[in-house]
Length: 174
Image 1 (cartoon, one colour):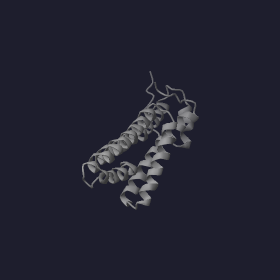
Image 2 (cartoon, helix red, strand yellow):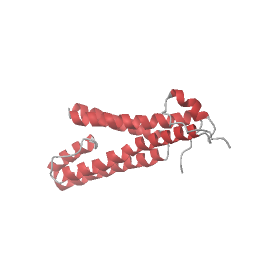
Image 3 (cartoon, helix red, strand yellow):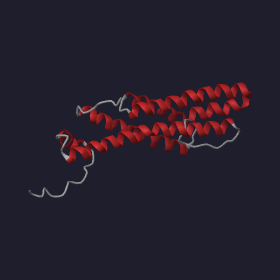
Image 4 (cartoon, helix red, strand yellow):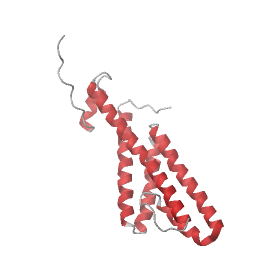
C-alpha cells in the first residue's frame, strides 16, 4: 500500500476555493473548507448573543442609576433606559418592556442565524446598522468603532452562509 503523503493544509475561503468546495465530500480539502465556512457562520451568528447579553448588563446598570455601560450593547435601549430614569417607576417598567423585546429579538436572531438561515443575518445587519447610526449621532466614538466591528463580523458570517448557498450545499439546520 502506497503512502499518499501528507494531507494538504487547510485552505482559506475565497472565490478561488469554489473548486475545492465543489469537490466530493470525501476530499479532505473540501472538508476543511466546509469546516471553515461553518466556523465563520457560527462566529457571525454568535455576535447577536454578545449584543443581547451586553444590552442586558447596560440596561440593569442604567435602570439602577449607574451611568456606565458597554459600547457593544444597543444604543437605543441605553437612551430609553436613561430617559426612563426621570419618569419614575412607570418609566422604568416601560423601558424594561422595550429592553426585554430588543434583547429577545437579538437572541432570536442568534438562534436562527446559528441554524444557518440567511435572513436573520440581513435583519440583524439592518437593525444593528440603524443602531450604529444612532451611535454616530450621539458621537460615542468607541461605540461606533465597536458597532462597525460587530457589523463586519456579522457580514462575514452572512457571506460565508451565502457561499454555501451559492454552491448548492446550503441546508438550514432543524
